[in-house]
Length: 305
Image: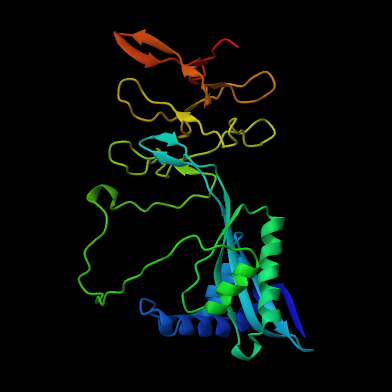
């Protein structure tokens, strides 16, 4: 009898040898896969199990419920990205994606009912999380998996070609350009977008020496505001009219133009583009400067509703 359940951190030591066997088998078919000697597979599995975007399913067998297989999957939401200092939306509708990281079952337990049990569990999770697309990369020699997925309604969408080159790890040329080297970029959560200098494309650092990210606009209840096409709305950073530098307040926070809202709390739009309040300028000594109130807060003007 076979059973299925989700994995937890306590299972890492039992999953580790199965994962090692899984990669060793893959490396025999793919010369580009070179395994590290003395790798800590237990820590590797724990790291995956601690991730909020990764789910592990285990196949158990018999009265003792010995772990004889696993299927690890991941999920993520597609988001907007930053381009030349402004927000650029993808021409495609955002999707919630899912995929497989790895699947392995001990050879003596590779029976149709056992494999189906793991696959059905992952598909049930996809439906629960409302995954819109599942993308799977299956090697050519796994004919059985091809047939199994086709029985579940999956269709072949692409053909992948690979080429392996024998390259030593000595004197490898550096990747990237001088403009992008020398700064350690912290990867943000999916809801944040790193602000970059439009000329150098280097990450923007605030006066406190921290990297700056754009946060999606939220309402008073903390809910993310979205445009009419369902995408999160990101604010427009304020620039100094003299230097064109990004503007930071006294506490070192990035100053952004507030988004305009309709009477019902929805984001105001013009031709499908969110409308933001414009900064107020004043003339001082023949120079155009940003206007502030007595407390030093930057002032913005609202358009007529």
